[in-house]
Length: 328
Image (tube, rainbow, N blue to C red; front, side, top):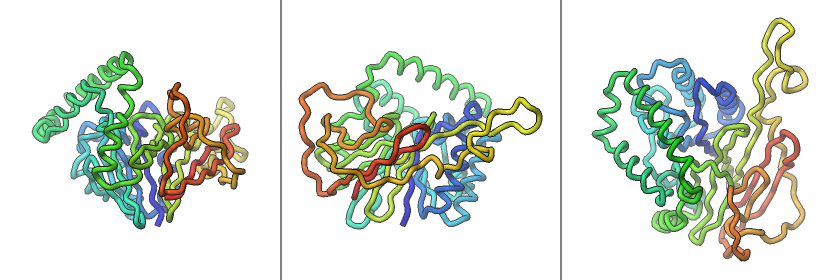
């Protein structure tokens, strides 16, 4: 079985390259998978399932095509698209998941969430989240006129950007104690989430935490096949060349057009033995998958893990993608 996980694409009409990359991902990766889990913030803003915007309708149609092709779809709400509802699920063929969801992979339990619930030190955001996730509040929002909802979404976005610019970085990251509590309390050894935009793989006492990146210059996804988990990034690419005239952009790859997703992912070679990690909590890393801050404390080796992780890292030169793998 092949399972894929994505989050934080923040699709919007202002970022057409991300939308094109997502449709390539669906055609070239997700169409060959058994399951696709969308762990929130697929959209920059989702104002309701009745949104008639062209982008919203195109994404719904694309997901429906994927679902009809045999890929099971699962959607977990993020802080940008918490108004995704039953109509969206019906039209796309996806299953809506709760804030925390456990899946099994052999004898391993894997915990999924968006990630915002783990940032418990951000007290102001957690108060806001409790308010807008209240079922009655959500019902009121969903029944406001469309134009009014658009204005509210734009206002929330502006306030969020202003507030985040003044918050310490550690407040907007996960709280380690909450990660430990969720893993231990739910009997999981692996946690996969997004939200923080800090891709990487981190070790905690109760298990391992895999963080998906946001789609900007790079796209990110997790792939689980058998007992191997891969965290993969790939270059989003450039706009396709314009047709006609001499003013078009230079093709991104020989032969014209946008390079395929697979061209951005190099196979992972078997590396020589790796030295011990150089920073606590960052036991698997590449130049493109590191936390933004490194601990200044004296490095300590991570505790032994029953997962017996192995490291395989692809080439990270030029515009190629990279891949981190470990055994579940």
